[in-house]
Image (cartoon, rainbow, N blue to C red; front, side, top):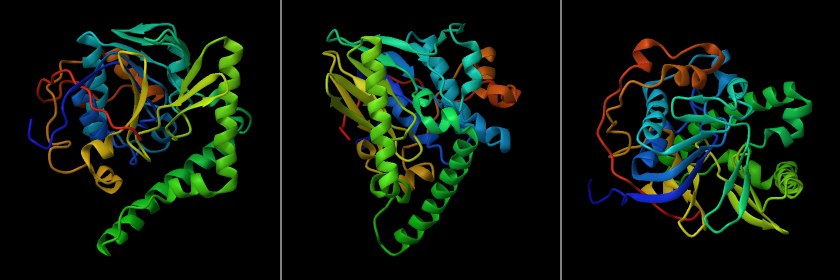
Length: 314
């Protein structure tokens, strides 16, 4: 570990969603770095870990994406309780819910008992997105437009960087400034809070909309753990039950442009030596497209990590 490396941290629970493995916008190297320095008793994968929609159209599975799957499986083998709650982009895995693959549990939804006694419904959230639910063709069209914006955003920020200007996210700007997008986020949050009330729990933990947030909505605590495409955010639960959003780009002091390019310096330079993974789980994570090839699903290289935890609020 160098002077610039974050201190290893250990949490009661870590929540990660919307990684979108299989897409060019996925910040796999940043997620690997986060997983290296942060450990927990329980790790929730709150949907859209693999992007089956994009993989069906175009196979993109570089080594870092496979390394993420191997890292998650290795954590499960080493004693972390790993619970995978599939989303709409990895909906193929919903056919396997309530089954266990190796040490990984697949569940459609989960009630999480917080250290402070509060109970949270853990669910991806797409079931309560009207676009996904009632107009799938529009959701697919929106997915294509979203990927296009992310690609344009990359080249736009390359130009800004050469001009000496800081990173500026087009997609985040549109999400926060366009009236319909703001209304969409607000409506989604309210729908999730209503669901939590109906289920008789104290809060809801979800993903889906790529907008990390922890806030009180009346009597309900609404938590969204963000994503690893537009931002590099996860949510953690401390030993006292306190929830916190971790923005890994701020912890690592890198811009999203550097994250898009795979990071620099210590980030992504070292892999951890993994043991062969559960083939069944690799197949499920790779989805309806079949297993990741023998070479990529087999052993990857790297180095043992220690228990971690790094904390910076977004």
